[in-house]
Length: 321
Image 1 (tube, one colour):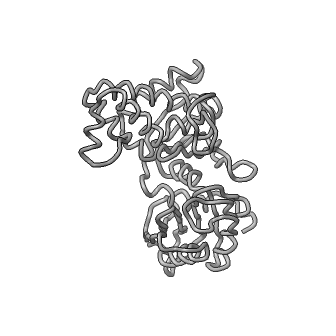
Image 2: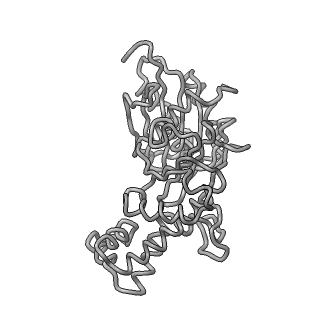
Image 3: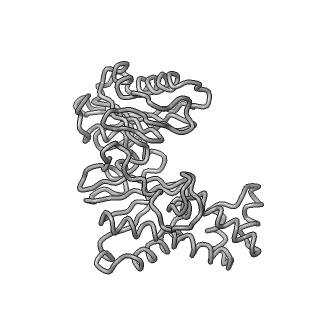
């Protein structure tokens, strides 16, 4: 490792793991470590594990900063976890100041979807774009937005909850308790529900594919059945890709991005998802927008959180550090 290279550390904190990596300024991962969080019982134990993971990957190298991607609502300006998910006592935590005190280096704290958005913009599928929107379609729908080269955080650091924009008035009830959210129509969880309901109404290969694995019907089974020519599955794919495109239409009309990056588990379906979503989105947007954007799969895979959190240290304001 070159002595003049600037290094940063990225931490991706999830409900089951802490993934931590040392990166150089190009966004290349040089060292990594991983800890499980299942045995951690308190927020203090989580912070101890975060600090230990950073110390492990940085070794004796000079590190310019640490970026932490955390689930839930994060006040990035103050570095405070407002509330988290699946972590013990993970609310009201002044994480930035606590980790800075222990490590002696600047720390940035950001929501995990925002970190992923920046990772794809800085070193992934969104490189070279001016305005990029990142969408992750998995259990829910997460998102992050880079406008004119800057991560959009909002006045309290909790902007870009695109999964909770509405595409229906009387639609299914979302996990947030409100009806009609995009997430309630187009998340991986919702796609699985729609596929299950379709297979219950009419016999489908989806049922057999899921039974072979001994698991409930998922988006993977839906798209595989459609690929094999199952009529029910094909109709259902047409339905759920329309829902995805409706949300993307709103994204295009609101932010005028030149690039939309889609990640998350559902994106791994590949072109069977992307082809109809691209076609439907173009047909839904107003004519002046139709040649202004591209829709591409995310490229950083499981490293997206650590890459985004780390490289934010090169670009975000160091106010209050």
